[in-house]
Amino acid sequence: MADLEALLDDFAGECAALETIVAPLDDRGWHTPTPAPGWDVAHQIGHLTWTDEIATLAATDAEHFHALLAEAGPRALTFVDEAAATAAALPADELLARWRVGRTALADALRAVPAGVKLPWFGPPMNPASMVTARIMETWAHGQDVADALGADREPTARLRNIAHIGVRTRDFAYAVRGLTAPAEQFRVELTAPDGTLWTWGPEDAEQRVTGPALDFCLLVTQRRHPEDLAVRATGADAQRWLTIAQAFAGPSGAGRTAGQFA
Figure (cartoon, one colour):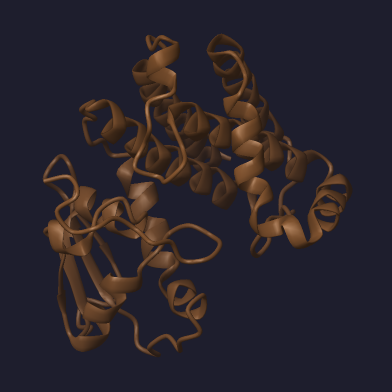
């Protein structure tokens, strides 16, 4: 439970940081286009709101969650965008209030999940700690879109470790979603944290290695920056290829961002 509580604290912190950017916006600000094609700021917050609510449903009523997926049927690839558009049409104050309520409800729901129980999801089932880590990652990633749209600065924090961890753990998924076979050997990943300390994953003697700033790695695995615009470096052909396909999010691989887009 201590680990879950720490993760929930990070989730609350990430949400609060994003709220400081969007809460002061007027109606025009809420409808500022973001780097995600067709999505404005309201779409981004609407998506986070809806996903928090669906995660709460998964944690509290698995049968209803499975029914929702079955009902989506052939719309499974589009109903997430449809939900974002529906939420984005709400008045800004109503959407903001709904987001606050939804993320609090999710934290309460995850605390109540019995030990050992995994929650259904759009990909493999997840335990509560994995679920909230995914919510931290997505809140940060969509928050980056909002920050880029508004020209807002975001101070990197130790919460990036959660996103980097997902980025490392989803290495094989990035290959699988493209119909590729992942390398059998583990990679060594060494990232410099915002405070200058080193975060590491994988065996120290691995031949395939990835190094760089944690912030840049997180921007890479969430596809918020083009690899050429980041200071993430790879040693070994397999590691170099991974950097071109890495993704920490579920679903189909995205188009990502173009080189020099945010120069």
